[in-house]
Length: 319
Image (cartoon, rainbow, N blue to C red; front, side, top):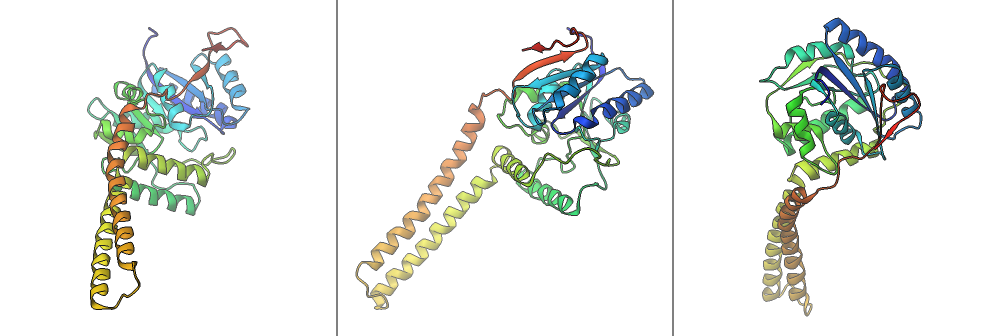
């Protein structure tokens, strides 16, 4: 087994290939200053065609860089778990590829962590995103916290995780993983370190509004039963209202207010049956959601190519 090192930095790469050289340079300077042995795992999530050539160049020139190329786009969280599974570090740092997460803050995050506090989040008091993006992010956090009470409200993709905890993430095998939800379920021993949010100088965020909404829906469906409970409670409420209205229709029939033939029986059956059907569907959904979570066994990701400085120049290890 390869020797263990102090820190593994895992970076899923989608659209930030232009920033990788500077990211490596700043990481090397900060790790050397802190006196830490380290490695950098760059996971190409098949976002931009120029990502893999940039990763290959770094891996061929620096022995601490490992390149992994997925077979297709699996998403940021799956790519991050892929890097974690290949990591050798006692601490695993996860960060974005756009330099919004400053490598210089890693040392202070590691100082805040310990065996008793195996999870450290980089907390951004002020983000450099647009006002609309910041507002939507805060609204998302507020909603998730109420749908998923165990969720650490200061979550971010800039994390320091003790290796034993991080490696447990690979055991979930969710088709669409959400790392912070998984970590919140695994441990409540987390802390934060205030970090300056860096400026994005290359490209634009890969998270479009459509992707953000899709990501939010995935979190709710996978880690919260709130949508199913809303269906259950909504069905029960409609059933109750339907029953009351049915009583009103029956009263109208006997009091002479409703004289249309068949209207009473038809409306009573339709309203009550619809309410009961929604109630039953909500209850079945509760069980179906739990069964789906227990039976999913699809791979989280598939690695197509692994590249390190130990491979001959120009040759990739196809897996």
